[in-house]
Image 1 (spheres, rainbow, N blue to C red):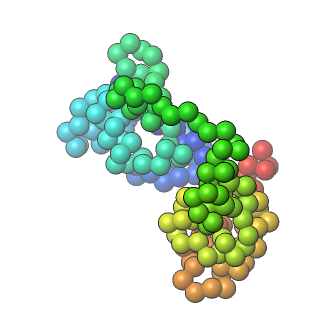
Image 2 (cartoon, rainbow, N blue to C red):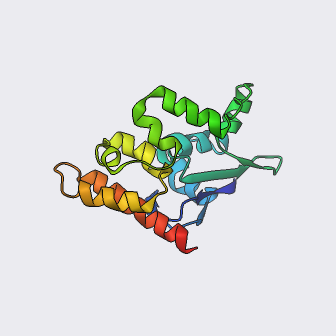
Length: 176
């Protein structure tokens, strides 16, 4: 089985009983020997789907590429799933349309469209919302102020860890 799993982020990640560096690739054959045989999963598409659904759920972090019998490298993403279902992917909205849609949905989503938010909005986020929205925020000053304010509040430990991690990611990106 040809292909690999790549960490697409600038941060080290821990997955599949190993630490994976930024842009590091893990061969699919190695993962199949570790997990596929153990769990009695067929080689190829079934194993790739199992990886995507069970082990590597976050598509923004993990890039899965594999080569099928025709030796064409295929990216295992939602596009390949839509081809299998014979469904055309939806047209991606323009920047102005998506900004309008976000602001129209709810007032709490408004700051996501502009890639910035107020300190109060960020510190009041639940962990579930923070997982969705923090990767879209780019203003490091606002994140630092939010971290300072959230660290003084009760029951915001997880949010503080997430803010520290996002600040660290933005620092790494800005140094490149």
